[in-house]
Image (cartoon, rainbow, N blue to C red):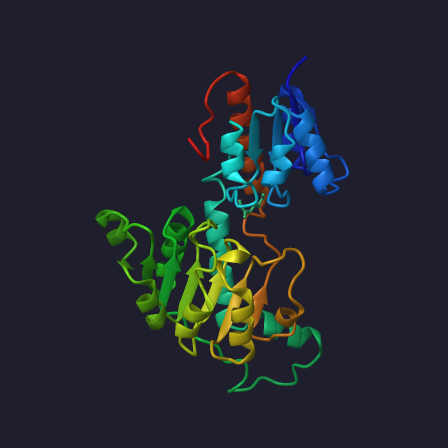
Length: 322
Ligand code: 8YV
């Protein structure tokens, strides 16, 4: 009997087809999201579990895993929904899909920067509601990007890809990162490193969150740090909701102590805080940074390669904890 691979969500057709050719796979035909009970049943039966961001693989779920569960191959980069320490204790290998969604997620961050500073969503809503009466010299004014300061928190793959784009739009690139990136790369991105995140925040017109979500980055944009932002500054988040204190952000947006926010990710996805929905100074998208045909197929390819490598007795390239 070949090892059983259970996939929790419906994946692109070509990915599922290849999985059927290669593995003894159980797909999720109707794409019904697994409940906690479904996940427990899956970890009791599978040798390999293919998860996504919508599966909460807690220590509780993993405590029910049968010894046969050897691998969790995540479809996506972020693994904050998986209890990594419990997985390590149980010697379950975790893999993810880095690299193949970098460009698309950076595009999304750039789109949110352009969209919120030029009030795109607000303008479109006004037009669709039949409220656009006449062109006005003082109507729908936004902020020009050229010569403004963009502060990138997290200068990894996606942060760097955003810096490249933003440079082309004339933004000055600043960044905060666990480690300063190498000098050549810094030069090529025209990026200025800040050792103090607090100091960087006070000087920025736009702040973009591009760090991964870990216990260290939880609420990295805390209430206090949101309070350090300029009144005309914007916050962009394409990583995970928990890197921002969402309640404090909403208050700042309501009280207009900052200019606006472009958000692709939220605290309790897909349940969006209704106060956010009532605001005009936000541009909100439903966690779609990697939502291109190309990225989603490439993510599937990565999962297939990781699982196949593992089942063939080798160490997969994208192991999260080595
Ligand atoms: C994915 C993401 O689509 O890769 C990530 O971490 O945030 C998304 O772009 C999602 O996580 C799929 O699991």
